[in-house]
View 1 (spheres, rainbow, N blue to C red):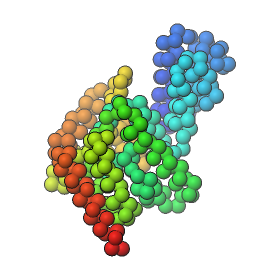
View 2 (tube, one colour):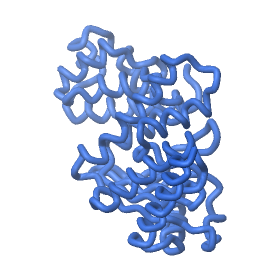
View 3 (cartoon, one colour):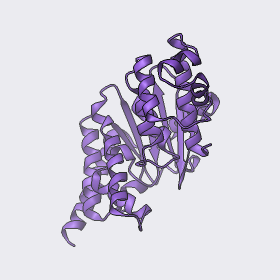
View 4 (spheres, rainbow, N blue to C red):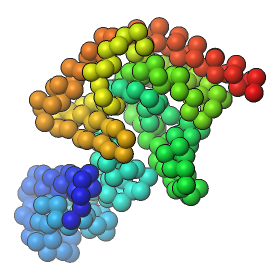
Length: 277
């Protein structure tokens, strides 16, 4: 039996399997017969007792005509080592989201990170890790960022505490490139970005990073993250509270144009610093 977020991942797989199976009009035994396992085996998947297996997931996709969703869940949600266990389910859900609103208080959000910045963050968190491990983590983060431009339906809104602009992750050159990248996405109107300045003070309502995700055909969820831990929240009352907290942060943040100007100013400061070292 898995623990924590890994168990939540199995439960997500099982609930989705049960829904899709029933929509197709199959009993557990009927589906099991078609994918060459027992009905009890299917039941163990649905009850999150047994870890989903890739070959069975592929046959389930073929039988239920689910466009590879169970194969992707196995690869990205359950077996993919590029993401920490506590973040794996949130990483899969962000691919399905139609809207993401995010607040970070110390680092550039993962979806906006450049490869150099992502590498610096990963090295800082894993100073004794192998090059292969670092490369794997960076690759996963860079791939996640593609949904910003690839998924044209996605609306992405980020509120960055001013700390994010000042902490020199990876050095001045890396920061200059990273901040210019964020500003560029904002100027292109690919994303909406605001900065919560030191003067606002309202960020004290948040004790960690917050992400809100909305979906086309599922209830919204909230994800909160602290050091080496994350919580995916789907209770409607809790999600509503999280949305209210985010609205307060948005109200205290600088307007978008002023935010982009501040980000570009910080990028220029780092660029000058890099040129003198």
